[in-house]
Image (cartoon, rainbow, N blue to C red; front, side, top):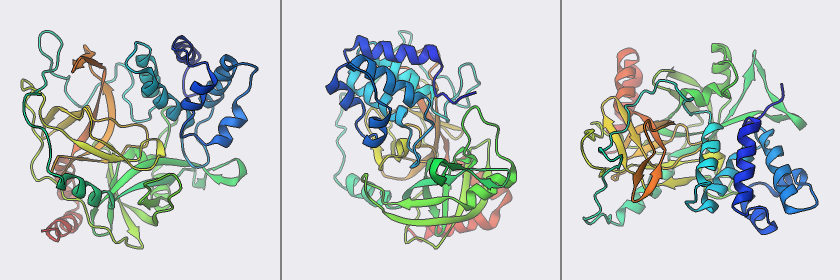
Length: 385
């Protein structure tokens, strides 16, 4: 069975929505392809008119798992389409399709590990907008400093002990984000190191370890042609699929400070209005680092869960979820559809929320079985004071 990100009916819905919005013009096709490697776009785009070219390029992207660099062209195309739709009804078609191809999405009907989003009787999320929400400019400097401790991860997939290769003997890569939690320790999601698409079986323990040891870590990937600072992992120290985290030991040790961790959960009672915010530094779709800090309200928060509206995408898995003081509150892991939604924030319908594992849950889990590792993390935090 050939690979496809979207089923034929869903792809057809995407194509129809694009045509209904008038995206079947040469200028629109160029804008939709922004950020996708031109060589790929030129190769797969055929047809005598713009409508035909729109159909051929989206069909080709749908059957392209990723490029040799690990980037997913369909994800970038859909992200561009969301922006270009500008709040019109067709935007939701693109958002649903983008969500469907994300490997960290909960499938429809699956049980969620965060609570249903609280809503008022009218289905509205209350937002406090009658107070000063400006921030000290130090916010920018602290965020820039934190970005140096966050990296794009290139996980080389293995099957039955054999490294997987693509056409031209290029490594078959799975992309994610990771960050320094101690002197030579990097944390990311378990599913990033597992490096499997939704339709694939989980890796064997041996393949998981091989993938951990073959992970390439790229710091300071801030622009498309940046090489950054690159190091490698030597293996996975510990991991847990339920909490969805994995900790890698790096070698050589990068000159990067660990990020500061919150010692208490970020709390938002279900009945309270939206007020707390979180910020996510990430490599969405394997792109250069981006920061999500618009419409970034916390939806639910306690010691066991944290969900938020901050934007992410495939490749953002494993990102740190910061509070406004740039303390890490959670490890980003995925998204889910808001039940009984959409809800509205500032008049805009919101159908999905992101969620992460609170960092306190991870630290408590580590302390329960890996005290020496817990001591390493504590020493890294103590050195920041």
